[in-house]
Length: 201
Image (cartoon, rainbow, N blue to C red):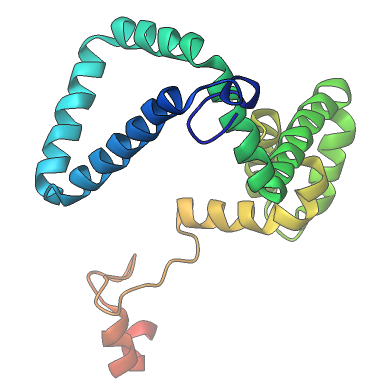
């Protein structure tokens, strides 16, 4: 299929007048794009917002139009998909690798959950308290089930889950010097630094 959306075998049989129709059609399309580019950004945002609102209010009608457009231009859409795939080949290969790794991880934890649990358990430091380790291991198992964590990346990404747990519960949060210290009747850390004897009373 060429850039005018016509199969090459059909294009070869067209007369000059018939081809001219497609030349003009593409020219009008490019002109429309240039005109839209000249519309102020604020106006474009308003038009896009109204268009989104219409689609949200009538989702079934929009889906029907999309299906009709797809079936009318199925060969054009397939050719466009093929062109995109080959022009972004490395990107698509990486995407497929991630999808296969996700499916493989889900299958592994479904068929042999004990093996995956042992792998996660060995990746988490045993110096952490037991309740902290249990929470992190649970979060990692859930991530594997959801396809967000791959089995082959468990050891490499364990540190991220430990950091996420610490951020959530603020175990290592920076303390303000003006924050009152627990059990010291309103005494602040700044007061203790100014007079070390206060903390011993």
